[in-house]
Image (tube, rainbow, N blue to C red; front, side, top):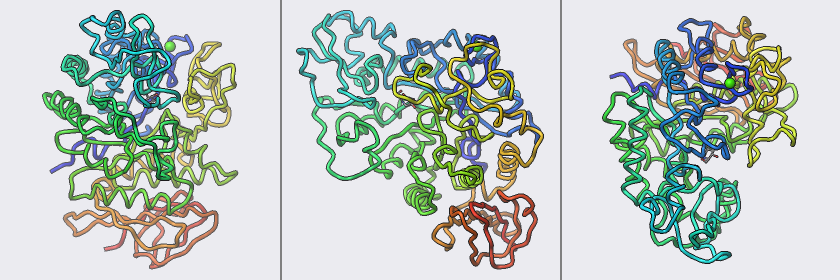
Length: 533
Ligand code: NOJ
Ligand code: CA
């Protein structure tokens, strides 16, 4: 039986405001995306070859959190387009066999959403209980919960002498999923887009969906788990505002709506205290994929990545049916090429990193621009847009060396364009040795190598600063075994390896080379080797 499409697909995240501006207002839009679908996949080897797009939020929004504050779940932000331009984009994508998933932001709405405007209007409003309100006095928030963006998770509303809860900005009040009307309203929004033909959703902070009914205080965090200490919330153990068992019921409800349609999927943004909690989301009646964010925290060391992969293999073994999902960059973090930059090793590291992402067992998510080696942008203080400082990883796509990198003809792109003179699509498009050319060859190789798509994962002993593993899958000739070896050090390494032939290397000229029991890797080199049989 063929695996479902989301297990073998290469996903590509687009930040719509920053991809391509079709009408010269300085803001990327849906028509701009449609115009560049051939770049993503035109069915030939000349295009990137991705299979599915995740679009960051496109709904109407006051943009306090750049679309993650939705004011209408069933519309398109007018700066991005309208429903007809959405339908055109989806049809053109599907014509090219590219699937599209949307960002669904169910945990909170904008404070400008009509639901919240009503809810806020009086204590007796029928939608009062759609959000989490507690009557009280100023200066005495109902409990100690904290916003992920800093400060208390409560905002006082003097008009009704009550507090409302917000996991993020105060302009993003959290919905109350204990109210069945809220559940129903979100199901209707999900069905609206599925009816229009979208292939699924990336679901924002899916582990936050339920809050403790008694609103108990979170206990302080006493361990030294650096992962949960990354944000201001890391001061607490999120027993009562995140990862509540009841969230799984809400997710099951979403899944029931999806299952009324064919072949639709959800990938959850799942933040968990302990990785093993991922498995509880990846059940047959919940989400199909859950992001594993641990790569974001890895320094450039083989052992760090090996630990993440092996932990994931333990938690989601092949036989469990749950499928891992990895990513190196998205719209919330510094781009990985910038995180791992190190003088003239930077490009080599980025190539080695993408070999790992596209060959480890699991579904890879790419982030627009990484395929040309786009770096974090330099956004000066006066041009900053995001309240919590994430503009650097959201700068416009660099299509050419022309004005605004070919992103927009406007004199005022919504964010400044990065170094498009040296890094742009046009410059790399016809060069197979460029970063773009390398991504294209790697994606193609992955696609035609069943062991890389579906095979098991097995670690291979190697020097400590190398990550070496095998992907294996039975076929009509026996077992297809593909070895991936990545040298994270800045020096040459050599080790004993199975015999085989190099299918791809980050260094030019090694393809087709036979390996006779000992493998030599140059500094930061990654190779993919098909074992002889
Ligand atoms: C996670 C999203 O990735 C981030 O961009 C957003 O600010 C928060 N969720 C709140 O929706
Ligand atoms: Ca535009």
